[in-house]
Length: 91
Image 1 (spheres, rainbow, N blue to C red):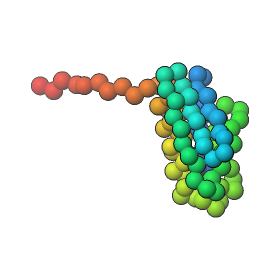
Image 2 (cartoon, rainbow, N blue to C red; image 1 turned 135 degrees about the horizontal axis):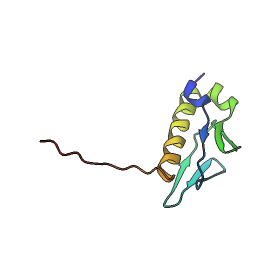
Image 3 (cartoon, rainbow, N blue to C red; image 1 turned 45 degrees about the vertical axis):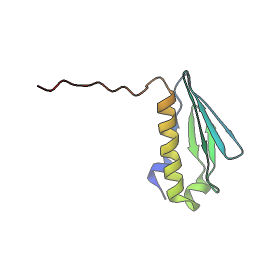
């Protein structure tokens, strides 16, 4: 079983996640991202976190870990902690 897929994805304040017919949409303050779930992988949303279902972790181990990582990146990208690059001056 995938260790990555077992970990829940925490939903920060200001981020909404909806799942409809194999498609997950993550909406934040500035942007919205969507992901089509592979067949056999399902998610459960509740208590401020997203979890992959036990059945999908057992049958689709590698895909479940990948989907969990993608969801985590989507939540991070749409949330309040947006990516910032700071250049450093090297002398």
